[in-house]
Length: 237
Length: 101
Image (cartoon, chains in turn brown, green):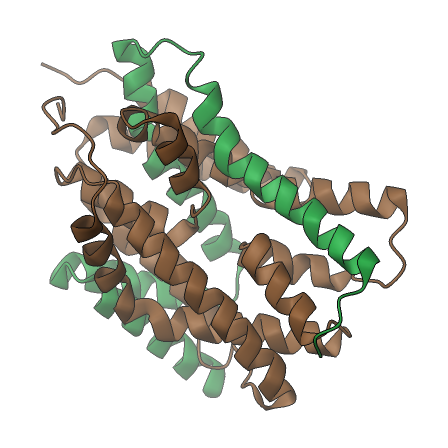
């Protein structure tokens, strides 16, 4: 049992460590940001608008998908649809933040909520592994998130300026950066029977939901099913 | 270049509100749930389940390059314990498959 974990702290040293361990992934993240900037330019967004989007929304997949239906004339119903689309694509963040409660919940509320504003897939996955390995400094999560945010905004601007000159992200495998990182983050979590049941349930449920339901519900449905299946599987002792 | 259309700004703010809600709601809601050992086990099982639920449909329903690239990432991560090498291997395999179909 990972019961004896050190209490949570939040230090600059931790933030620097988190930022430093994100550096190897900066080229991949930057390429994704540039792809968004270039696509935003094609859709008629100004440089300032594209950077505002990356800075305030800070959710690559949602920003990319929302561009498909981007317009100059936002009606009330179009705005509602945009909000719902963003919510469902990023529903996984609700679960990711819930999983951080036992750790971040030890900090004062303003620190934990401010930290969570920097929640992205890559710093969450890295921080959960860091926590599994016994780390306690929330700064690790914040530092990795902050450097990701800076890079995301800067690369969006670069992509918008370069425009059509950005290479096709799929041709150089940019779309594999985040999933491949997830694979590497997943492996150290394997312990045995509980993971076999939980992960198996998540795999089958998410795949089935992806065929049966439109949009991005499959991630949340598969994750919740897998977490309950795993959490209710008791270790043999 | 630096102009911001009010409608566009409104749309960006709607998206930002949704992502801020997503980032904080799960953490807030868990305050209302007493963390019993059972709840703790479900929370501990959640990160792996989120990753699997993201990965499996992506791998199964993506192209051959995605499936082969992620398989390469799995093997390299297992052998080297390096997340960076796993990502590089996945990109290299996918780029190669897409370059020579």
